[in-house]
Image (cartoon, rainbow, N blue to C red):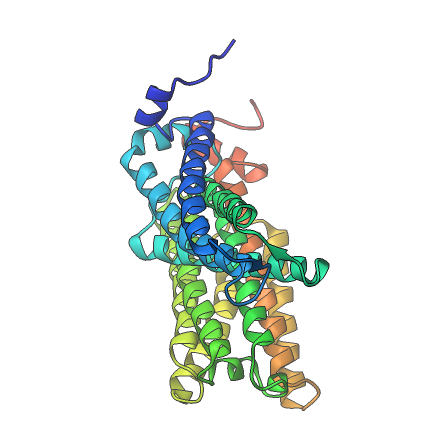
Length: 376
Protein backbone atom coordinates (compact mmCIF):
# COMPACT_ATOMS: atom_id res chain seq x y z
CA UNK A 1 0.00 0.00 0.00
CA UNK A 2 1.33 3.47 -0.92
CA UNK A 3 2.49 5.59 2.02
CA UNK A 4 1.87 9.35 2.20
CA UNK A 5 4.82 11.54 1.23
CA UNK A 6 6.86 12.79 4.23
CA UNK A 7 6.82 16.56 4.70
CA UNK A 8 10.62 16.80 4.37
CA UNK A 9 10.56 15.04 1.01
CA UNK A 10 7.60 17.14 -0.11
CA UNK A 11 9.55 20.34 0.56
CA UNK A 12 12.51 19.02 -1.45
CA UNK A 13 10.40 17.76 -4.36
CA UNK A 14 7.17 19.84 -4.41
CA UNK A 15 6.17 18.87 -7.98
CA UNK A 16 7.46 15.31 -8.22
CA UNK A 17 4.02 13.66 -8.30
CA UNK A 18 0.33 14.43 -8.32
CA UNK A 19 0.17 13.94 -4.55
CA UNK A 20 3.10 16.29 -3.94
CA UNK A 21 1.55 18.94 -6.18
CA UNK A 22 -1.75 18.78 -4.33
CA UNK A 23 0.04 18.91 -0.98
CA UNK A 24 2.22 21.82 -2.10
CA UNK A 25 -0.84 23.75 -3.24
CA UNK A 26 -2.52 23.08 0.12
CA UNK A 27 0.53 24.31 2.04
CA UNK A 28 0.70 27.48 -0.07
CA UNK A 29 -3.04 28.02 0.40
CA UNK A 30 -2.65 27.61 4.17
CA UNK A 31 0.15 30.17 4.22
CA UNK A 32 -1.96 32.61 2.20
CA UNK A 33 -4.86 32.08 4.63
CA UNK A 34 -2.73 33.05 7.64
CA UNK A 35 -1.24 36.13 6.01
CA UNK A 36 -4.55 37.26 4.51
CA UNK A 37 -6.43 36.82 7.79
CA UNK A 38 -4.02 39.13 9.59
CA UNK A 39 -4.18 41.77 6.86
CA UNK A 40 -7.99 41.54 6.61
CA UNK A 41 -8.43 41.69 10.38
CA UNK A 42 -6.32 44.85 10.58
CA UNK A 43 -8.22 46.36 7.63
CA UNK A 44 -11.67 45.56 9.03
CA UNK A 45 -10.86 46.27 12.70
CA UNK A 46 -13.45 48.28 14.61
CA UNK A 47 -16.14 48.54 11.93
CA UNK A 48 -18.93 46.72 10.19
CA UNK A 49 -18.15 45.90 6.57
CA UNK A 50 -20.60 45.80 3.65
CA UNK A 51 -20.69 42.69 1.45
CA UNK A 52 -20.04 44.54 -1.80
CA UNK A 53 -19.11 48.01 -2.95
CA UNK A 54 -16.34 50.37 -1.88
CA UNK A 55 -14.50 49.19 1.24
CA UNK A 56 -16.41 45.90 1.30
CA UNK A 57 -15.45 42.31 1.93
CA UNK A 58 -16.11 41.57 -1.74
CA UNK A 59 -13.76 44.30 -2.91
CA UNK A 60 -11.03 43.12 -0.52
CA UNK A 61 -11.41 39.52 -1.70
CA UNK A 62 -11.43 40.49 -5.39
CA UNK A 63 -8.32 42.66 -5.18
CA UNK A 64 -6.54 40.23 -2.85
CA UNK A 65 -7.35 37.27 -5.10
CA UNK A 66 -6.09 39.11 -8.18
CA UNK A 67 -2.80 39.98 -6.47
CA UNK A 68 -2.46 36.46 -5.06
CA UNK A 69 -3.20 34.94 -8.49
CA UNK A 70 -0.30 36.78 -10.10
CA UNK A 71 2.13 35.93 -7.31
CA UNK A 72 1.04 32.30 -6.95
CA UNK A 73 1.12 31.64 -10.69
CA UNK A 74 4.68 32.91 -10.97
CA UNK A 75 5.80 31.03 -7.83
CA UNK A 76 4.31 27.78 -9.17
CA UNK A 77 6.10 28.17 -12.51
CA UNK A 78 9.37 28.89 -10.70
CA UNK A 79 8.89 25.73 -8.63
CA UNK A 80 8.19 23.74 -11.78
CA UNK A 81 11.23 25.12 -13.62
CA UNK A 82 13.51 24.73 -10.59
CA UNK A 83 12.42 21.11 -10.22
CA UNK A 84 12.36 20.50 -13.98
CA UNK A 85 13.39 16.85 -13.63
CA UNK A 86 10.46 16.12 -11.33
CA UNK A 87 8.07 18.03 -13.58
CA UNK A 88 9.26 16.20 -16.71
CA UNK A 89 8.88 12.85 -14.96
CA UNK A 90 5.26 13.56 -14.15
CA UNK A 91 4.43 15.07 -17.54
CA UNK A 92 5.97 12.10 -19.29
CA UNK A 93 2.81 10.12 -18.65
CA UNK A 94 0.58 12.75 -20.21
CA UNK A 95 -0.43 13.01 -23.83
CA UNK A 96 1.24 16.28 -24.77
CA UNK A 97 4.84 17.40 -25.10
CA UNK A 98 6.41 19.67 -22.50
CA UNK A 99 6.62 23.26 -23.75
CA UNK A 100 8.71 25.71 -21.75
CA UNK A 101 6.85 28.99 -21.27
CA UNK A 102 8.62 32.26 -21.98
CA UNK A 103 8.54 35.17 -19.53
CA UNK A 104 5.81 37.03 -21.42
CA UNK A 105 3.74 33.83 -21.66
CA UNK A 106 3.91 33.51 -17.88
CA UNK A 107 3.06 37.19 -17.44
CA UNK A 108 0.04 37.01 -19.74
CA UNK A 109 -1.31 33.82 -18.16
CA UNK A 110 -0.77 35.20 -14.66
CA UNK A 111 -2.65 38.37 -15.58
CA UNK A 112 -5.45 36.33 -17.15
CA UNK A 113 -5.85 34.34 -13.91
CA UNK A 114 -5.85 37.60 -11.94
CA UNK A 115 -8.55 39.20 -14.08
CA UNK A 116 -10.75 36.10 -13.92
CA UNK A 117 -10.36 35.97 -10.10
CA UNK A 118 -11.04 39.71 -9.77
CA UNK A 119 -14.20 39.73 -11.87
CA UNK A 120 -15.42 36.40 -10.51
CA UNK A 121 -15.29 37.46 -6.86
CA UNK A 122 -16.81 40.87 -7.64
CA UNK A 123 -19.74 39.09 -9.29
CA UNK A 124 -20.12 36.69 -6.34
CA UNK A 125 -20.03 39.58 -3.85
CA UNK A 126 -22.64 41.51 -5.80
CA UNK A 127 -24.91 38.46 -5.91
CA UNK A 128 -24.48 37.87 -2.16
CA UNK A 129 -25.22 41.52 -1.40
CA UNK A 130 -28.48 41.28 -3.35
CA UNK A 131 -29.34 38.01 -1.56
CA UNK A 132 -28.63 39.50 1.91
CA UNK A 133 -30.00 42.98 1.31
CA UNK A 134 -28.66 45.48 3.86
CA UNK A 135 -26.58 42.91 5.77
CA UNK A 136 -23.23 43.91 7.28
CA UNK A 137 -20.27 41.71 8.26
CA UNK A 138 -18.38 41.96 11.56
CA UNK A 139 -14.59 42.16 11.74
CA UNK A 140 -13.60 38.58 12.62
CA UNK A 141 -16.15 36.77 10.39
CA UNK A 142 -15.27 39.16 7.56
CA UNK A 143 -11.55 38.47 7.96
CA UNK A 144 -12.17 34.71 7.99
CA UNK A 145 -14.37 34.87 4.88
CA UNK A 146 -11.80 36.99 3.04
CA UNK A 147 -8.92 34.73 4.06
CA UNK A 148 -10.76 31.57 2.99
CA UNK A 149 -11.75 33.03 -0.40
CA UNK A 150 -8.25 34.27 -1.22
CA UNK A 151 -6.67 31.03 0.00
CA UNK A 152 -9.01 28.99 -2.23
CA UNK A 153 -8.13 31.22 -5.18
CA UNK A 154 -4.42 30.76 -4.49
CA UNK A 155 -4.82 26.98 -4.22
CA UNK A 156 -6.65 26.84 -7.56
CA UNK A 157 -4.14 29.10 -9.33
CA UNK A 158 -1.14 27.09 -8.08
CA UNK A 159 -2.63 23.84 -9.43
CA UNK A 160 -3.61 25.54 -12.69
CA UNK A 161 -0.08 26.90 -13.12
CA UNK A 162 1.68 23.62 -12.37
CA UNK A 163 -0.69 21.44 -14.39
CA UNK A 164 -0.92 23.59 -17.54
CA UNK A 165 -1.98 21.66 -20.64
CA UNK A 166 -2.90 22.88 -24.12
CA UNK A 167 -6.59 22.48 -23.31
CA UNK A 168 -6.35 24.28 -19.97
CA UNK A 169 -4.56 27.19 -21.66
CA UNK A 170 -7.35 27.40 -24.25
CA UNK A 171 -10.00 27.32 -21.50
CA UNK A 172 -8.16 30.11 -19.67
CA UNK A 173 -8.13 32.11 -22.92
CA UNK A 174 -11.86 31.65 -23.52
CA UNK A 175 -12.84 32.47 -19.92
CA UNK A 176 -10.54 35.50 -19.91
CA UNK A 177 -11.95 36.79 -23.21
CA UNK A 178 -15.54 36.37 -22.02
CA UNK A 179 -14.85 38.03 -18.66
CA UNK A 180 -12.90 40.92 -20.13
CA UNK A 181 -15.36 41.54 -22.96
CA UNK A 182 -18.44 41.53 -20.72
CA UNK A 183 -16.71 43.84 -18.25
CA UNK A 184 -16.03 46.29 -21.06
CA UNK A 185 -19.58 46.01 -22.42
CA UNK A 186 -21.25 46.46 -19.04
CA UNK A 187 -19.08 49.45 -18.10
CA UNK A 188 -19.28 51.20 -21.49
CA UNK A 189 -20.24 54.88 -21.22
CA UNK A 190 -22.05 54.68 -24.57
CA UNK A 191 -24.98 52.24 -24.18
CA UNK A 192 -25.43 52.17 -27.97
CA UNK A 193 -21.85 51.13 -28.75
CA UNK A 194 -23.14 47.99 -30.46
CA UNK A 195 -24.66 50.05 -33.26
CA UNK A 196 -21.12 50.82 -34.49
CA UNK A 197 -18.58 48.04 -33.93
CA UNK A 198 -16.67 46.19 -31.22
CA UNK A 199 -13.69 48.53 -31.52
CA UNK A 200 -15.88 51.34 -30.18
CA UNK A 201 -15.42 49.80 -26.73
CA UNK A 202 -11.73 50.72 -26.83
CA UNK A 203 -11.90 54.41 -27.79
CA UNK A 204 -12.88 56.14 -24.54
CA UNK A 205 -10.69 57.05 -21.56
CA UNK A 206 -12.71 55.11 -18.96
CA UNK A 207 -12.42 51.64 -17.45
CA UNK A 208 -14.37 50.15 -20.37
CA UNK A 209 -11.66 51.06 -22.91
CA UNK A 210 -8.89 49.90 -20.58
CA UNK A 211 -10.61 46.55 -20.01
CA UNK A 212 -11.26 46.03 -23.73
CA UNK A 213 -7.77 46.93 -24.96
CA UNK A 214 -5.99 45.06 -22.16
CA UNK A 215 -8.12 41.98 -22.84
CA UNK A 216 -7.10 41.95 -26.49
CA UNK A 217 -3.39 42.48 -25.72
CA UNK A 218 -3.20 39.73 -23.11
CA UNK A 219 -5.33 37.40 -25.24
CA UNK A 220 -2.95 37.93 -28.15
CA UNK A 221 0.02 36.85 -26.03
CA UNK A 222 -1.91 33.76 -24.85
CA UNK A 223 -2.65 32.85 -28.48
CA UNK A 224 1.09 32.83 -29.21
CA UNK A 225 1.48 30.45 -26.26
CA UNK A 226 -1.22 28.20 -27.68
CA UNK A 227 0.59 28.30 -31.03
CA UNK A 228 3.61 26.55 -29.50
CA UNK A 229 1.52 24.13 -27.48
CA UNK A 230 -0.75 23.16 -30.38
CA UNK A 231 1.93 22.64 -33.02
CA UNK A 232 4.42 20.88 -30.74
CA UNK A 233 2.11 17.84 -30.68
CA UNK A 234 1.91 17.53 -34.48
CA UNK A 235 4.06 14.56 -35.62
CA UNK A 236 6.56 15.28 -38.40
CA UNK A 237 8.78 12.83 -40.28
CA UNK A 238 9.99 14.73 -43.36
CA UNK A 239 11.41 18.17 -44.10
CA UNK A 240 8.19 19.08 -45.90
CA UNK A 241 6.11 18.21 -42.85
CA UNK A 242 8.43 20.27 -40.65
CA UNK A 243 7.95 23.24 -42.99
CA UNK A 244 4.20 22.73 -42.92
CA UNK A 245 4.12 22.66 -39.14
CA UNK A 246 6.27 25.80 -39.01
CA UNK A 247 3.85 27.53 -41.38
CA UNK A 248 0.89 26.75 -39.13
CA UNK A 249 2.83 27.75 -36.01
CA UNK A 250 3.91 31.02 -37.62
CA UNK A 251 0.33 31.72 -38.72
CA UNK A 252 -0.99 31.20 -35.20
CA UNK A 253 1.75 33.41 -33.74
CA UNK A 254 0.93 36.12 -36.30
CA UNK A 255 -2.75 35.76 -35.38
CA UNK A 256 -1.88 36.43 -31.74
CA UNK A 257 0.35 39.38 -32.60
CA UNK A 258 -2.36 40.97 -34.74
CA UNK A 259 -4.95 40.42 -31.99
CA UNK A 260 -2.68 42.22 -29.53
CA UNK A 261 -2.16 45.03 -32.04
CA UNK A 262 -5.93 45.57 -32.24
CA UNK A 263 -5.78 46.47 -28.54
CA UNK A 264 -2.49 48.37 -28.75
CA UNK A 265 -3.80 50.65 -31.52
CA UNK A 266 -7.28 52.02 -30.60
CA UNK A 267 -9.38 52.84 -33.62
CA UNK A 268 -9.86 56.52 -32.71
CA UNK A 269 -6.12 57.27 -32.56
CA UNK A 270 -4.56 54.72 -34.92
CA UNK A 271 -7.26 54.05 -37.50
CA UNK A 272 -5.02 52.62 -40.23
CA UNK A 273 -2.94 50.41 -37.93
CA UNK A 274 -6.07 49.19 -36.15
CA UNK A 275 -7.87 48.29 -39.38
CA UNK A 276 -4.77 46.59 -40.81
CA UNK A 277 -4.45 44.44 -37.67
CA UNK A 278 -8.16 43.55 -37.58
CA UNK A 279 -8.44 42.71 -41.27
CA UNK A 280 -5.06 40.96 -41.15
CA UNK A 281 -6.41 38.57 -38.50
CA UNK A 282 -9.20 37.50 -40.81
CA UNK A 283 -6.82 37.13 -43.77
CA UNK A 284 -4.30 35.04 -41.78
CA UNK A 285 -7.04 32.79 -40.42
CA UNK A 286 -8.59 32.19 -43.85
CA UNK A 287 -5.20 31.48 -45.44
CA UNK A 288 -4.27 29.07 -42.66
CA UNK A 289 -7.55 27.16 -42.92
CA UNK A 290 -7.42 26.90 -46.71
CA UNK A 291 -3.78 25.71 -46.67
CA UNK A 292 -4.08 23.40 -43.66
CA UNK A 293 -4.67 20.24 -45.71
CA UNK A 294 -1.60 20.97 -47.83
CA UNK A 295 0.81 21.74 -44.99
CA UNK A 296 -0.44 19.12 -42.50
CA UNK A 297 -1.72 16.20 -44.62
CA UNK A 298 -2.33 14.06 -41.52
CA UNK A 299 -4.88 16.50 -40.10
CA UNK A 300 -8.30 14.77 -39.74
CA UNK A 301 -10.53 15.40 -42.75
CA UNK A 302 -13.57 16.26 -40.65
CA UNK A 303 -11.69 19.08 -38.93
CA UNK A 304 -10.42 20.40 -42.27
CA UNK A 305 -13.99 20.48 -43.59
CA UNK A 306 -15.11 22.26 -40.42
CA UNK A 307 -12.56 24.99 -41.13
CA UNK A 308 -13.93 25.39 -44.66
CA UNK A 309 -17.45 25.77 -43.24
CA UNK A 310 -16.26 28.42 -40.78
CA UNK A 311 -14.55 30.37 -43.56
CA UNK A 312 -17.70 30.17 -45.69
CA UNK A 313 -19.80 31.52 -42.82
CA UNK A 314 -17.40 34.44 -42.32
CA UNK A 315 -17.53 35.25 -46.04
CA UNK A 316 -21.35 35.15 -46.02
CA UNK A 317 -21.41 37.46 -42.98
CA UNK A 318 -19.09 39.88 -44.76
CA UNK A 319 -21.48 39.93 -47.71
CA UNK A 320 -24.39 40.60 -45.34
CA UNK A 321 -22.45 43.54 -43.87
CA UNK A 322 -21.61 45.01 -47.28
CA UNK A 323 -25.25 44.79 -48.35
CA UNK A 324 -26.41 46.40 -45.09
CA UNK A 325 -28.24 43.33 -43.76
CA UNK A 326 -25.95 42.96 -40.70
CA UNK A 327 -24.06 45.64 -38.82
CA UNK A 328 -20.32 45.31 -38.21
CA UNK A 329 -20.72 44.35 -34.54
CA UNK A 330 -22.68 41.21 -35.41
CA UNK A 331 -20.12 40.19 -38.03
CA UNK A 332 -17.20 40.74 -35.63
CA UNK A 333 -18.84 38.84 -32.78
CA UNK A 334 -19.63 35.78 -34.90
CA UNK A 335 -16.21 35.85 -36.60
CA UNK A 336 -14.39 36.00 -33.24
CA UNK A 337 -16.53 33.16 -31.91
CA UNK A 338 -15.79 30.99 -34.96
CA UNK A 339 -12.06 31.69 -34.96
CA UNK A 340 -11.55 30.90 -31.28
CA UNK A 341 -13.83 27.86 -31.46
CA UNK A 342 -11.71 26.60 -34.35
CA UNK A 343 -8.57 27.21 -32.30
CA UNK A 344 -9.86 25.12 -29.37
CA UNK A 345 -10.87 22.26 -31.68
CA UNK A 346 -7.50 22.51 -33.45
CA UNK A 347 -5.79 21.95 -30.09
CA UNK A 348 -7.79 18.78 -29.50
CA UNK A 349 -7.09 17.41 -32.97
CA UNK A 350 -3.36 18.18 -32.87
CA UNK A 351 -3.14 16.53 -29.45
CA UNK A 352 -4.89 13.44 -30.82
CA UNK A 353 -2.37 13.35 -33.67
CA UNK A 354 0.48 13.57 -31.17
CA UNK A 355 -0.92 10.66 -29.18
CA UNK A 356 -1.04 8.55 -32.35
CA UNK A 357 -4.79 7.89 -32.33
CA UNK A 358 -6.59 6.80 -35.44
CA UNK A 359 -5.55 5.35 -38.81
CA UNK A 360 -2.71 7.82 -39.31
CA UNK A 361 -0.98 6.32 -36.30
CA UNK A 362 -0.58 2.95 -38.04
CA UNK A 363 0.90 4.61 -41.13
CA UNK A 364 3.31 6.65 -39.02
CA UNK A 365 4.39 3.63 -37.04
CA UNK A 366 4.91 1.63 -40.22
CA UNK A 367 7.06 4.30 -41.82
CA UNK A 368 9.19 4.63 -38.70
CA UNK A 369 9.68 0.90 -38.02
CA UNK A 370 9.57 -0.46 -41.55
CA UNK A 371 6.81 -2.92 -40.65
CA UNK A 372 3.56 -3.58 -42.45
CA UNK A 373 0.62 -2.53 -40.21
CA UNK A 374 -1.79 -4.75 -42.16
CA UNK A 375 0.37 -7.82 -41.83
CA UNK A 376 0.88 -7.23 -38.12
